[in-house]
Length: 205
Figure (cartoon, rainbow, N blue to C red):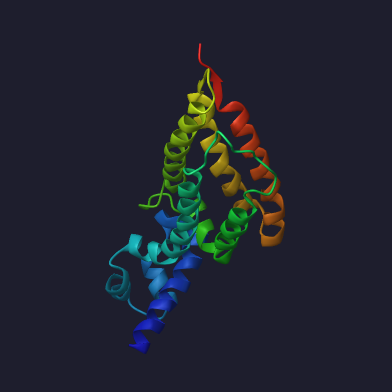
């Protein structure tokens, strides 16, 4: 059992290097297994296929991030906009949790964001944006219901879904320092929330 765990970990470490250098499509399973001192058959034994090997690297970090995101999205659906007042710092706890999860295994998330073309993980960001858009479209309708004479500006709502996710993508791909990332993202979130409340509704005429 210990040998199996050790061999599995060797494959994962060698795969990280190969995927980072060549991307998913061009990465060689033969080279990964050779670098690990194992046969190619070991990859199929532990991971079934190339996607499974890639998933062994990125699944856990992605799931941690998405759990925090979904908990935040679910909590926001409970907002009562008839009494809600936005204040700077309202989302600091969310920012701290998310940045910690993102930077806990930044290398794996960079693989997902930059090296997943050709894998089943290609388009993950687009799927997260789609989920965000669905969540905030519902939130925007609730917001509009509390504002007589207003309706959701569908274009702006969709645009905000993109910039919200892309803000975090840009951060993790350009800022290697976790403390600096957290310092940057807090005012960005404050700004986005304020602008979302300002621009996501339009006159219902």
